[in-house]
Structures are given as structure tokens and as C-alpha cells.
Length: 187
Image (tube, rainbow, N blue to C red; front, side):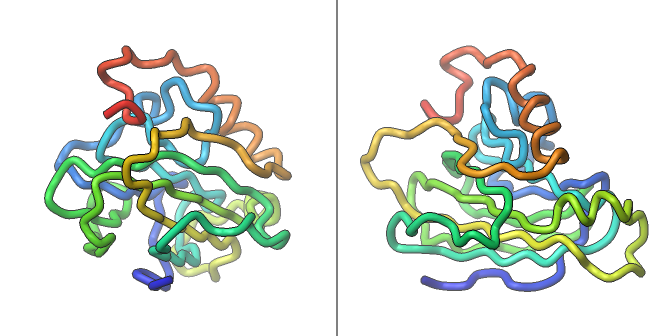
């Protein structure tokens, strides 16, 4: 396991991104046809990540693993998985609007599975933070691992405990599925 990011991540509008393309990620398109509403992976080359914090910083750790990890520890209250297929030469972690970005060295594989875990979403949502001056409350973990020639698995909700996550899962399930040639898990 290699840690490739472990720091405060600035978020606005409760979102940040992982992108391998210059295109802006559209919220409905990123979640089109998905079960989970926290890690939008329906558009090849990008991930649209949802947080409970509207505006401010969240703790984010990103790990690159050699193989699929064991089930997430119980402390992670929300856990989802999705496929990720980079479409460009590099992969970047980006804040809203692309104001800040960090290159992520994922090792150059053709396809990955990503697990996105969250904790304290409910408690953070109750506090309704809207300032970068307030301390981070919710925490997030992203784990990437290469899938090789394995057939892509669709996204999945592995654990859900908060009303905030339930809301976003419901949003994703309401988005129409993209045409087969546009689906990221078939790219």
C-alpha cells in the first residue's frame, strides 16, 4: 500500500473530483445509472466525490493498493465502490472549479476499482459548515487498486448509515442510465 495523498482537502458545494481529462464533470451525468450517490463514476476518466461539508476542508487520504482490500473497518460509516478508467496521460485530484489540483501517481494502470469511505457525514451535516475557517469534521478515504483484465463490476453501496448518504444514493438512482457506448464501466 502506498499513500498518495493525506491532507486537508478544500471542498465547495460539497464536492471534489478525480479527473484524467480536461472536461468538467457534470453532476447528473457522473451519477447516471449508478446505485451509489457518493462516488460518481459514470463518465470515463472522472470521479465526482460528494462530501457532507458544503464549504471548507475535509480530511482526505488516498491510497494505492496492489489488490482488493479487506472489507472497510467498522469506523467507516459510508462505503461505496465504483470502477475508474483513466482516459488521459495523468490523473489529478481537483477542488471545485479546478482552483487547486494535485497530480496522483496511480501507477499507470488501464483500469481501477475505487473504494470511497466516509465518516461523520451526519454529524457534519448537522453543523452545516460553510466556511474554510471552521475545523474539518468529516473524514474520507479513497482506495484505488488495479483490476487488470477483470471484467468491470458496476458501482455498489457497501455500507450506508446517514440520511445524507441515503439522499445522494436516491439522487443517483433517479438519473437515467447512459447509453451503453457512454458507460464508464464498459470503456
